[in-house]
Amino acid sequence: MANVVVVGAQWGDEGKGKVVDLYSEFADVVVRYGGGANAGHTLVVDGQKLVTHLVPSGVLRGRGKKCVLGDGMVIDPKTLLSEIAALKDKGLLADDRDLLVGDRAHVILPWHRELDALRERGKTAIGTTRRGIGPAYEAKMARRGVRVADLTRPERLAELVGRNLDELAPLIMHLGGTVPSEADANGVVAEYLGYGEALARYRGDASRAIYDEMKRGRHVLFEGAQGTLLDVDHGTYPFVTSSSTLAGGACTGAGIGPTSIDAVIGIAKAYSTRVGGGPFPTELTDETGDRLRETGAEFGATTGRPRRCGWLDVAALRLAARLNGLSGLAITKLDVLRGLKRIKVCVAYQLDGATRDELPLDLEDIGRATPVYEECDGWDGDAREVRDFDDLPTAAKRYVRRVEDLVGIPASLISVGPGRAETIVLKNPFR
Image (cartoon, rainbow, N blue to C red; front, side, top):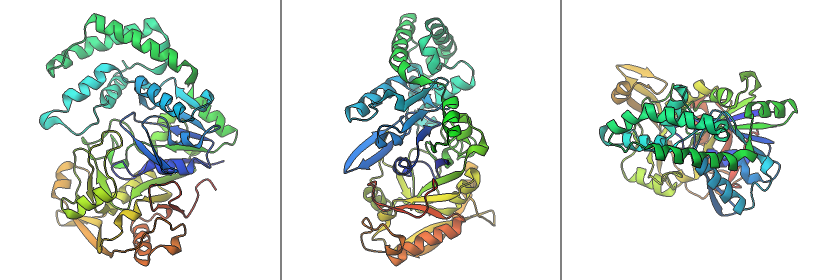
């Protein structure tokens, strides 16, 4: 038995979908423990691309792989049902027992999306996906949230909808939105009761189900969303998401104890990207940045927005390694660096005359900090057919080994292309 957590070690978009899909071959259960439809996993299998937003990537492995949406998530039921239908059309999720939606996961309501959009205007915008994630988590923490289980209880749902609107109407009005009427509220109640009926076959106690699977000796893979530097507590606040993106979030979001976790794999691109607003000290706004974006197809799976691209930030990776307790690195998109003559790596920061080995997190400190770069040789040659580390170009091998040395964490996996097979596995955490 092994229980493995996979987390993003940068600002998200690191390739978690592919890595989770690969590790799902060895897992019996795949659990998504936080976030919502603001995450998007782009998967390429047998030349076909599939994007998931809520259902864990393990769904691609077919019948017998149980996918769990944990209680720490915020779920848009309409989006989830649409995704389930699309997966079924592709012959996936043929057995309804292969999907479990946690009863205690919170639900995104229409005015959560409206508030998100109203706030993303002018100088206050932080670059959210406008999917209602933040406002849904606000409702959760204010103890007025609607949970999946509430969608089957008409009286309770109606009471919660009314209570939410009473509290949110002044804010919606203040931000220039349209306050829902009583008829609108009644319509939402009816609509969401319908969602509850459609999801009834998938609902259950996610925490207990995961516990029972672990007691049976089954392999469990916990899938994070977004990335370490977007964590609401330890990221580049306020340019963060509204949930815990760290490995520790698997404990609270899935309802397991920390002693149950056997390994934590942090995923990092061979360079850095960020989507939306917020600090990005190693960002490249020149031809090299444009080249990374085009070669790496750096456009958001959820929004389609172009991602900002820059050199690998090892100082940020050290922070991610410490916060998550990483036991291994999964380095993705190594192939994108092909053809560059010289490659820079940020190894530290200079701030107020001192050298810091981790990315500072205060916005003013980041603005004043200067990245310290180390240069590496580039390489030519297509590595997408390489399956053994020793067969990589010499400079590519040196680059990977230098990253391992600088972060202090060994590489478990190296991705040399978008396809499932285009991968070098150095160590399997399930074995």
